[in-house]
Image (cartoon, rainbow, N blue to C red; front, top):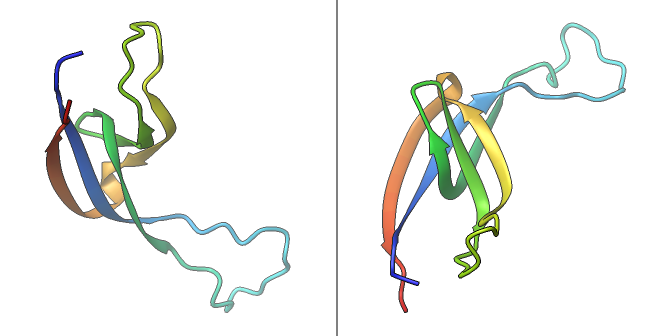
Length: 90
């Protein structure tokens, strides 16, 4: 299998915070947006979103799905993005 360049990135993002089933009042400190930081292999990207995988497997089997644990983030919530490229070794 030939070497390929793997695109990865780290993002800082803001999104909804899920409180759960706890009862809260309107002045609760739990009622806020959540700031997150995520890194991964770029699976797909367009103007509206970026999908990052936790794991990538290079496989000689053309029918194998190479990505695992993929999360899609809306670009509207991304504050910062840092991109990197890695060349695979043999």
